[in-house]
Image 1: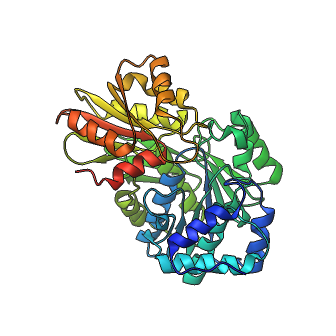
Image 2: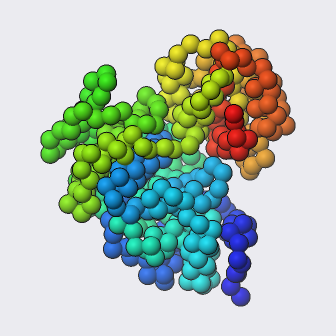
Image 3: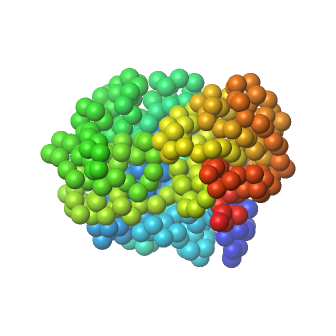
Length: 422
């Protein structure tokens, strides 16, 4: 008997219990259900992978397409507060009813095939985009690339934003191994992009072996920061006088440069003018990616959970200016390189507020406190039973000339956002 329910929470609970493991790499099962559902989109599909920067890149792409008047479907993960954030059309999250309709269609088609939570959601998202007749779809890879459910769909353009160490248990423990996995989204004869300034040789070799039309930042496209604006250069010329992206952070120009290269590659199918690009850059928003909330004390939210992202956050904190005291609300998962994150941020924090997290794989606050001490951090460390108490303590301790940085895994940022700061 097939599962059926009326509400999205019931469906999500069902998905969490459906498959024996949360992550089960491979395309055979999801491809089988894809074919049963007839999910062969006629619109252009863009797949975006990478260790960090995927969300920002997808958000800027979608903002530019929306500014140009196209109906753009965006699939991203994980969500911060509501599952609906994962599936959006013109950057508006899908309704519960639309998501349930997609999930029901997957359940009907899958037969005895078992799917993970992410695989189920990926198929349902494409079902929704096809039902809504979008003009273009932007799909964010969940994990890796080659064996990720998103890669069951044929991209017209594929891009790898960055390559660094994360999810080593699934992707390998070197940049070369991880680069090969991420390059698996490239296709023969199709535009492919890499915005990592040091692309792994494995990525370059795979693109060459399959005959992908690879463009690499610094070689085939680039940007020049001109202080009050910036300039993009690519195969077909340059675009001067560009505004800085509304997304904050030292690495966003590289992401924006990749976005323009992708828009340029698909110009014949979904043309986006320079005015639309500028508007998209100015209007883009994305919660939790070096998000600075207005007011005092300054509150910074960042989902930096691996050393590569921590390096970007460290630079962004330095660039933000002087604060008398910086408080951190920080916690993470046991299978992440917490010590690597702390090595890059230990000297940027004066007081650490470490909450326990009620999520699978969460590291204990006592272990994290020990890692903070071992990192050489100078700041005091306090432990709390949850994020709410950690946030309350940080707010109570922080003066108007101080800063609170909430970072680590998505759960930390999500819980702070749920408290509606300010």
